[in-house]
Image (cartoon, rainbow, N blue to C red; front, top):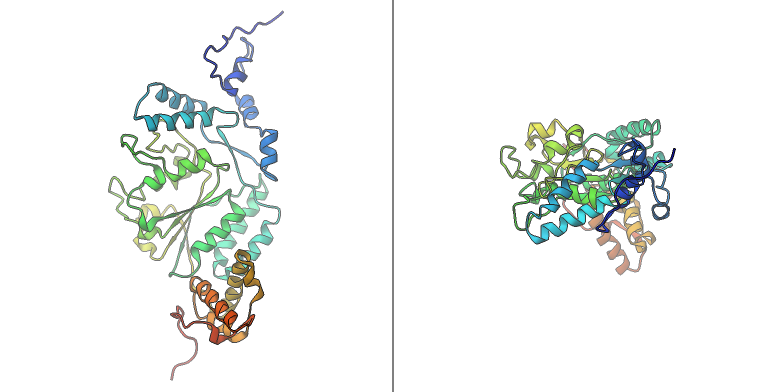
Length: 380
């Protein structure tokens, strides 16, 4: 018996690859939008595999369903909103309709992740408790697909302990990208969740942009100085408002940017890190969603180690610094300061040594900055 394809041919020439695949299914086939088609659409193309060296075998994350795309398409067809918003929504729709458009890769831990974590702890010894947690989660990831899952974490401690820098370095190991949001300057939740579609200058938030226009579904988003945000959870436009949804994985699976409210996205794979100096200022409902760690300035026993680590970081960014080395007195003087201050003091010290035609940094080359650590020793 011969089966005939009774599906009509498209007349407007706008057929997407996904629609073409479905049309080619025979009329009596029951395979419509089922898992086999989703798997086929989610498979990496040869071009993607070549572009993403070492990531072609990574798992896939479905960003949204076909029903969500259809809902967006219906809104676009109604021609609602100003011209700029309509053009933007048409572009978003085109992105999601292309082959693999609804899927994003999930970053897998590198083979040498344990060595990388050890090196990170050597550079940031005051984050040992945090990295102990990361090692445990990494071991669990290895038993599955190599994709680490970290609950939202808060690094709380005095200024200058290296919290933001540490978060960025950790993201290079565990996540598919890093994005910092400075919460101290946030006045509304627009940075995270977008601005109202009813506004003439409505814009999507960073979560939407990272997921729809990014390559990976599991970047790290750092909420820097979260305690300095305008923390008034009862206010309509509170900067932390979107976090009540985004920090809960079950709720994040149905995230909607208020600039594109008709499109439901799965934002549950994003990893959230936050820093604060006074976590007691955070609303309890936000604090309860975060795994908190106390971060202190490095103790005297490891402070010199941190100084040398900062010098190595400088050398990686600017090779000229690799030619300088510290004598013991200079290292001890720098060790009296927190990691944030050490970077600036080291640059100045290298400049002073260069003026004296030396590659060795002496204590006299180190400026007398504000000491961030109480002096050690006995008092009479």
